[in-house]
Length: 258
Image (cartoon, rainbow, N blue to C red; front, top):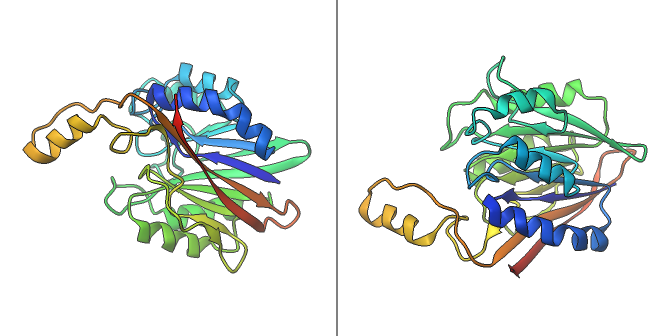
């Protein structure tokens, strides 16, 4: 089984970059499943039903979210109605939507879960115990987790906690692709952060001048997605479909997309 996972899609720039490059990525890597984190796809914060539909039509099989999952309040109804888009599984009980999904294609099954970290983040339920519940409740051999977290230490700790029990732990949220991809001893693929799909000459996708003013004046100002060339960040993972053990993980990085 081959999985292509695209990092956080940021705004219209990120969506257009994905539309432009996904066909060639599919041609080159021939993935069985295509996943993407879409929590920043609506003007940099949240996701809308229209955007989610367009991402699915582009060829993405499953969408994960994160701490901005409910920035657009109306998305709750969409999350309840659709199976292939998930918000973090460690939201409190009763929250709209679901935190895991099972994708099936060509006789292969892939279980996907989404969790938010707690270090430097909002107050979420314990992702470690929530991961136990996901793992124990799924009878699918191949399991992938999008761990949406700020602290690298928490991401690494989480990966070791579920090592050997899931096929891959992919870090998202910080929008900067890390170079620590690899296979842990018990067969779990890991990377601290997949990176983003969005404006290249930006500060994690946002307009540089606005962010610089916020740092230098401490005055609040509305974020705006940057313009110009875009970048695509992702990973390609090969997994033994009969055992769920990862065989390889390779970073994808495409710059200067116009």
